[in-house]
Image 1: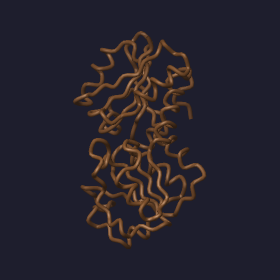
Image 2: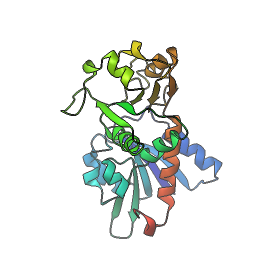
Image 3: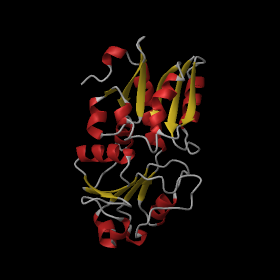
Image 4: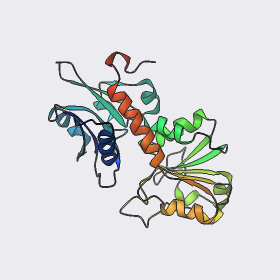
Length: 253
């Protein structure tokens, strides 16, 4: 049996297991399974891998996308540039498992934007691992990114600093936080939503619920909106390719 899975702290929100179970059924792969693994601490990673000898690879979600890096044996060059990992390939060569980290969030986000007109400036809500991939992609596309955090550093804004003028000046707003995710569907990031217009594009990485409170505010004001489901599917397909590519091609430039 080839085992795959998802690690995180709380996984009740995740659609990844359903996605891969459906994929394995559609592709007639009874030899594969995908499980959710809640880890109380990333310090348990090596023990977890050793306890699952059939594990071929796994996805990584909140809050471990950045803190997992020191626990990996190798990083794909793009994941190293981003500074976050959401996909790990487990290589077993008789000398113990070797963990290789990748970032398929970037590919998923990049492809999910295909054909979408983008403004020159964006507000990015949150500063976690998903934010790292989103800002990496947007800067490649020449979009200036302003990060917003509950605990901002010198180069970031707090939510209390977001004025209507700032909202009007940044016509792409990407929510990379879990605020509004199931089961807390009545929550939403603290923004001056009255400044939104039909020129705005609101992108929420959350996919459960389909319409978050954040997106609802945009829809009410005529903004373009997109949730994270397309990105989820695209990054999952990219992870599947990584888990199945020949070892010699891993981490190639």
